[in-house]
Length: 553
View 1 (tube, rainbow, N blue to C red):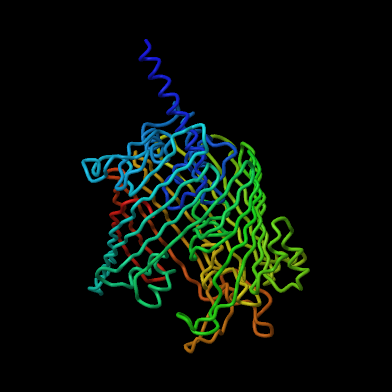
View 2 (tube, rainbow, N blue to C red):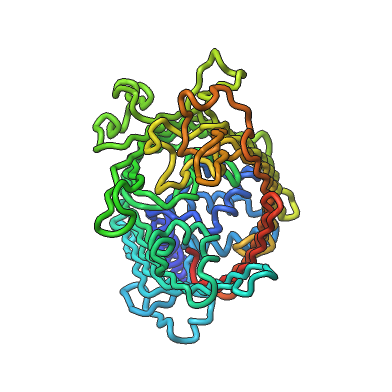
């Protein structure tokens, strides 16, 4: 009886220690982690009240809280969902995982170069977890990152249609004394053999100046430091972000452009959050393009988001202003109305406002929508006036009981939206649109299918039909018809009509199918499969991809 009681006490102390550690994880989890797809299904099924996926990434502790809420509905989960949930509970240490490390610490002493290398334990260079539940929690994890990425372009007219990419790197993350979180990921990718230009099909490599302009390797890093105490949260760092409600589309901030640096201050409560961020963007070079002689003017965007999160969904109020000069104290004020400030600053900058929302009228169904206002003259609504620049999307998703999610989304971006009379103030980062995933004067219809079969990676099928009215240029590159289809080109007074017609210009029609899935062979080691078909007007693109990867990145 005494031994049994002793075991219960030890188990209880261990549970409390793990529970405290899981809630002390202040660092963010990158958006490539498949846990976000699983949380989308859980959100749709009604398991996550007062929860939001409209601003990503999330803190590790927020994901832990969400997974615990899903566990409370265990009786309603399918067998596949239970299996997936257990995998994420081990990954996020809700359940104590078995571990193996290269360098020992006080908390982890199992050697990875043993039979544990091929087991389902968590494998790291180094791990440390403080085990005194009476003190502030400290954790350190240093994981290896590695991958072999094989791309094949189905093209009978080109023999040089494959590429092998090798990637090595590391990821360091953790929390110090329960309040300070940190994250650093560094990867370096080299083109091992084949047609290097195929790598440009991946935005990760397309956005890398070292690879695209110098034909060199692609080194990529993201990092942040975050502090949290009670209701206050702040961070500084460079990471890929998403802002706005939607499925495949975000019209406030998307992940097409390179990651940019930001300082964030936030106040967060159970069903309300206010967030201020001041972001550094990359402007156009005015001298040279690469190297020591390059001169790039400063460019910043300030953003505010008010979020209200009742149990049935959420409402987010968003505003932003882009400016290209030295830091402006007016926009560094974390609590202000940016539109009024922009007017008081002599109307030099590019401001925008928006609203997004999520509505869960019943279990297994939710609706998501966003609306962005770049500029508008109310008296000219419905007249085709060029300055009525808006973007919006609406989406619905259903979680079916047979482990299938079905979603549909429509997005429309009016001509000239995201542009500005000063091209430097347009909504681009390093010349790439950072707001909507489609250009101005475009719309897109998307159908999404996700099937959960017990792996952390669902079988995902996305079907997109996009229409874009592109500007028309002559053979010398001179703009001869401005359809409002380029965020870097505003109206030209005296040359362009003030009345626009949606999809005017050179109409491009793009039909695309994307199919992906993955299998985790053993913990950490996985194989991911991708297939992409795209038909743009009468030209076809077929690309297959197989990635053998250790850790997601």
